[in-house]
Image 1 (cartoon, rainbow, N blue to C red):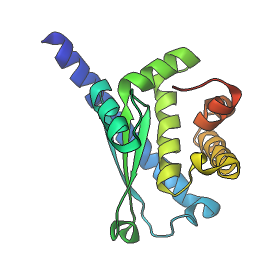
Image 2: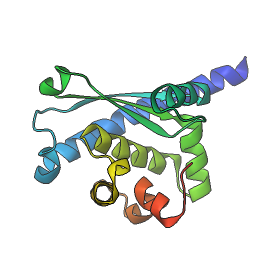
Image 3: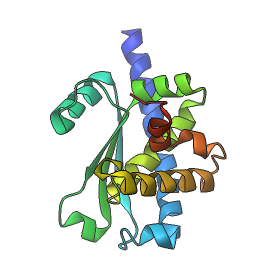
Image 4: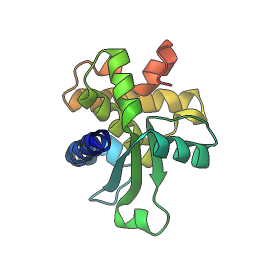
Length: 170
């Protein structure tokens, strides 16, 4: 029973941290004219949920047809919500976040920032899986947002740059 409580506290703590960090990210993103053009309605609203391994694995299978857990899933809001500023929801798999942070030698907080940025860019309509040009555009925004957000190591953090350099996240 103590393990379950500890796990829930960890998820709950990350949930709170994610909400605070996401709010700051949304303010930053909306302040950049070239990024805010992707979604002009303000303020931006994004919901966030931190989940365990079983949940993120099931969602990844159900919505992407991929087995195994993943780090972040982006669910764009259906109409009419985007017209009201609601971009959608991000779901982050905490065990994957922690494992990636350990493997890459940075803090779980830094990895949380990376996943928030990556997920937000998807909610704004960018998609690295559509082709090389889109991947470059999204990678550029990952680096820029992470850098402006106070992550000077941003070049090494972006998910797209990781996958292109062979440092795969999954």
